[in-house]
Length: 210
Image (cartoon, rainbow, N blue to C red; front, side, top):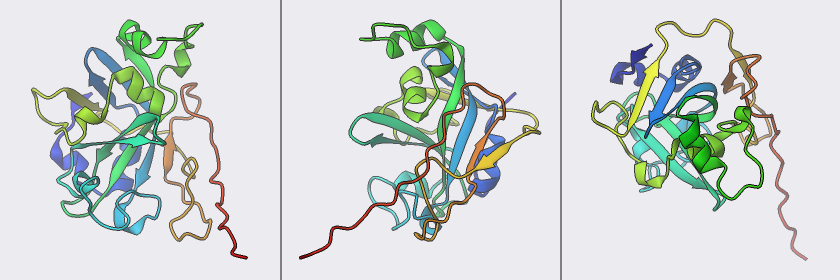
């Protein structure tokens, strides 16, 4: 493993995403090994928050690369992305799932709170909301520079990309194109029990006027 640098993240998002498989994300005493990610290609991707251009919310996605983009999803939980691509071209990789490899006790304090039964090991970070919860990532860390040596988030990447990588459509997302087409922009390590289950996008029907 090696510490990630700006050059690693500054490449096109579809190059960076599969090479993040196996990467270690460390926050506050908990480390997760990424087993599943999704790529979002900014203004050329209707599935991306940055599709319509920069806003105060999405400005971090337009660069420079190597920053953290955190957003609140469905009014319930946080999701975290690693900003990629050339400066000015929005791109981000959603951390979809991973394996807690260090700090399991601390991750459990966060994930087991209020539950009658302990969360199974494989489910501690199986899914984007569970992953951020285990790491303790919230909106307070939105816009953090991932490459600061004294920063709260540390990213280490494999010396060599994973040889066996599976690809498929993103979970719950269609497009680009808005026509229901799906692109294989989800990447995962085959055989890993922590990879999240796939759910296809559901087409929304527009209400008709009387």
